[in-house]
Image (cartoon, rainbow, N blue to C red; front, top):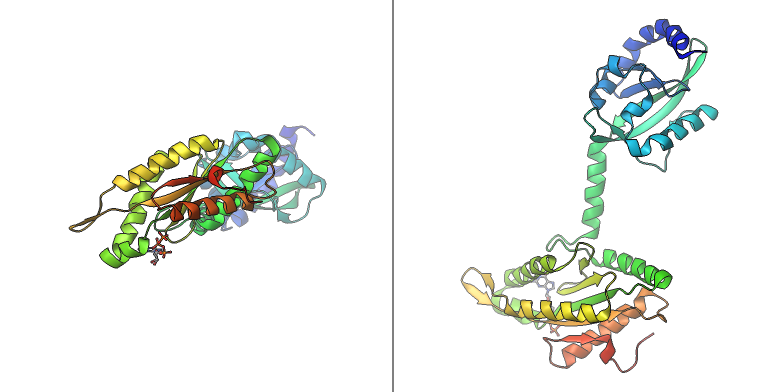
Length: 311
Ligand SMILES: Nc1nc2c(ncn2[C@@H]2O[C@H](COP(=O)(O)OP(=O)(O)OP(=O)(O)O)[C@@H](O)[C@H]2O)c(=O)[nH]1
């Protein structure tokens, strides 16, 4: 049947449906098997920045981001082949596209109805911007340290696992810098806990400025930090660690009228081809750090200085 004939055929029924779908609390979009919008409620018009009249008879792609149009068309076609009420796809996150080109995150429930003997799909579309932002914030918060803004230990481990897999696959070297403040307890004892906090916060700020966007700075313990340096040979990691060590040593930390200093002991390590897991690198970095502490602190110790690489 020609599109024009189908459109005419729908006219009577759709006009009687309009008061009903206009009363729905979500956007409602009715689409035929050719991906043509047969009817939308006014809420859908508001959501996508069109008048409901403009959307009617348009191809559905008008409200789908360009990148997803083909995949979405395929999903709609699949749905017509096995139609039943369900979310559009439980494994996917959908975005609609507004008239101004901006995207709106949405959840989509679909079902079919028969209009004048023709099966059409009705999608109920809900703007989930708030939920997605909340979700992203919760994920971010679960992976970051509130005081410094650095990632936490959990993220450090996850990222290190990923780096180890990457190294095993491609041999691209990644390095890690670990560091721990020297005699941090005495900073707290002498100047108060707030002074210790300032040391942690100001150091984190300084380090952020030194790193590339792909580097991953983490606070993995109270006064213990780690930086993952993807695609970085250990020699470069040593240079960076030494620069950071010197900068920390030179910082004049301030709390009200008190000025004080802090130093760190650092270690650097990178993956060996024999490393079965990320854990081997962490053990070498830990050992080197303890060796640095034992050697007098305020220094950079490398896994190279260990007598035997730990497995
Ligand atoms: N101000 C402040 N102190 C913290 C925080 N987290 C841990 N600390 C303190 O850091 C100190 C760590 O002490 P230790 O593990 O004995 O280590 P250290 O005094 O730095 O000595 P070395 O590591 O051997 O040089 C403890 O006193 C903790 O209370 C924090 O978030 N803020």
